Image (cartoon, rainbow, N blue to C red; front, side, top):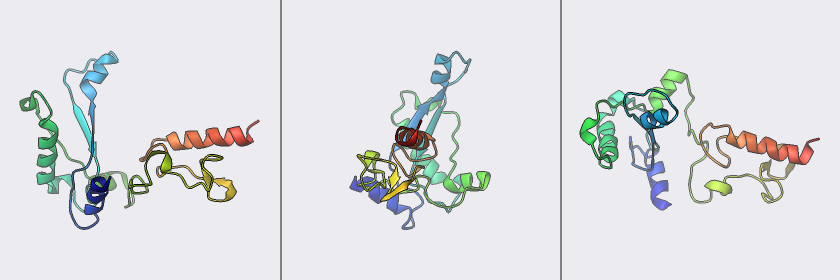
Amino acid sequence: MADFEAATLAVLDGDDFAPGYFQVYCEGAGLRQLSHDEPFDRLTVFFKNLALGKTGEQLTEVEAEVKQIILSSIENPEDCAWTRLLTPRDLQQTFGFPGGNIEHTMLVEGQSYFDRQYASDANRRFYQFGEFENVSICGSSTYPCGSVTGTPGYMCVSELLRKFGK
């Protein structure tokens, strides 16, 4: 956990990139399983720990490092025909995102999985905010995941319907 925290904080301390974890999606094969005629395989790789300051075009060394890390686990790396690095800066410029952490909280010890809550009594009402009986919180900073998935909202509403539903 300490290594993940150090990598996350490294980009705040001036590093452009610090390797952390990678999520790899094999999109070509997956689409073929869903009966879509996909003529090639594509890997989409999501990873953390990129500073906000530079675009992917400015970080060719980061793109090369990530490519080396990922392709070192691939049986036929010579078949890689193309890569593209999109950084937080690229996404901010393309979609108009504000600055900040997409997780809305740092994933550090005490903030992972079911520990990502703000309730004074999480066993009674997990999504209750502190001692405020009529305030619930859900979003990218709450369990079960970071990013913007909608899952915390669904789970919060389910909890509210159990408590107040008819």
